[in-house]
Length: 402
Image 1: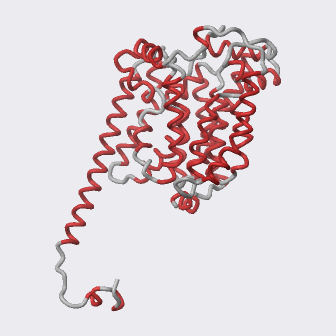
Image 2 (image 1 turned 90 degrees about the horizontal axis):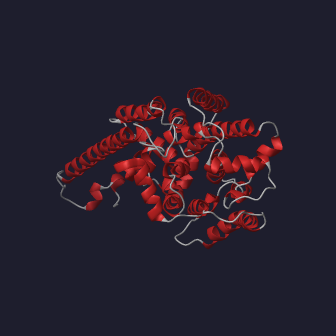
Image 3 (image 1 turned 45 degrees about the vertical axis):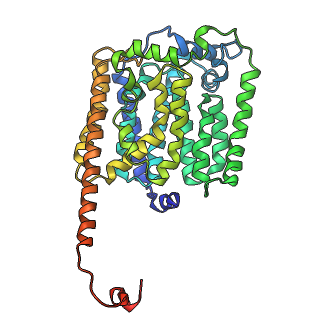
């Protein structure tokens, strides 16, 4: 089973390497803190609801904000100016997530250099930088908990998953989708009832917490914008905000070229098992909200690790892929210069990122075609060799039939 191969290939991370990854996360987080603009107060929409809950955790809130209480309650408990404390909590979560991303990549067999590359690319991705512009959201904490849950699953510390999902249930509702990668990572046969029961046991405490948060807190009467609008409204909102390039905004404005890089490695068993996480991530875009690129960022534990694996396995076309990755990493600066730090009204990075994605697909297809041609020539060369006369035993090594 390939997951066991992943365990044998998991790179032993030294203390120096772990420190390098931590420093990289801190440096890039500090850099974007200085470079990125900050949304002006008072903020609206989701951020405004979370700040209000942080100021007074007992006040009735709209659902689902009344259920996403972990970060507002933490900010309230830490004290100080609510806006400043919320900002600091988000920055710490983003930096730690980058470090956990590195550790996850190493456990999945990615080498030190390529794991650092994936970490840097994540911390420079367009969707990631949105949380520097508007840090008063629950996603940074959800990303930290999600990456920790993936790491616990891959290293075999499954007992840690239950408390992590409990915390995530009080942060974002996406925790439910983690049942899919958990089951497919744990299963040993097509229908593994043991893996089913373990998955349910790990998810059940989080479901209890989620049900309590859905029923116990006082909530305000729902408004049209506090409820799911349906796919038609979501599509109309995206077409209005992104123009004729709406169809690619979820991918171009989130992780960019790392999406096709990841797809190229999904045939590898360890990534295929984890890729079941992409189903709830992409379903959330259709069923819940119009912030496609923001919600697509939840795919990063699978997309970034699988993408790093793809680059590491390339040889002839690796320089081209590295160049495309480098361009993707600096692309958010274009939007910052253009005064377009939000995701709802994207700047020049949207068409440029789509072009980079197409170029990446072309490079990957060229590499695949070259490998296929080389394999066919090898098969033809073997098939054209003359077959010697005589018993089959003479063709087998050691004089025995194969």
